[in-house]
Length: 265
Image (cartoon, rainbow, N blue to C red; front, top):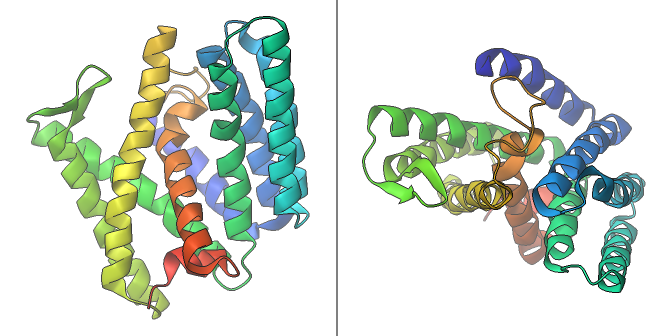
C-alpha cells in the first residue's frame, strides 16, 4: 500500500511542481487544508474546529505568495497567529499550540512558493528538495531495516536508528552530487555538504512530528493515505527541509532564492 500510494501521489506532486504558478499553489492549498486539520487534531484540544482559522490563514497566505507578494503572505500568517493568540488568551487557553501550529503550517508553504517562483532555477530547486527528502526516507528505511543497531531517540521515535540516519545522509549526498553534475553549475562538494545538513534537519522534522503524535496519544496524524497515515506523516521531514533551505537562501542569495540554496561558488 505504501508503494501504490507513492506511485499515485509522486507524479501528482511532480506535475504540479513542473507546472508551477497557480497549479502548484492549488496543490499547496489542498495540502494546507489537510495539514491544518491534522495539526489541529494533534495540538488543539478543540479538535477540528480549531483547524478552520488555521486553514483560512494558510490559503490566504498561499494566494498572496502566488501573486508575487511573499511579504504580504508572511503578514497574513502573522495576523492569523495574532488572532489565534488573542482568542486563546481571552478563553484562558494555552498559547503554545498556536505558537507551534501557525508557523508549522504556513511558513513552509510560503517558502515553497517563494523558491518555485525563481525563474531561473525554481523548478530544479524544488525538485531537488522533494527528491532529496524521498531519497533520505528510502535510504534511511532500508539502512535501518537491514543494518539496525542503536536507536536515535527511542523515547520519541522507537524505529529510528543511527544506521538509518547515515543511510539517509548517503542517499542525500549521492542525489545532490547527481543534481550538481546535471546542472553544471556551482560546487558539487558544497551542495553535498548542504545536503548533509538538510538530512539532519529532515530527521529533526520527523522527530518533531513524532513528539506531537506522542503528546496527542495517536500513532498517525491521520488516515488519509493508505499505508502512510496522514499527510503530516509524509511531509514532516519536507517541512523542516524547506524551512532550512529558505533560511539558507535568505542568507546566501535572497534575490534569487532557488539559486541561493542550489548553486554554491
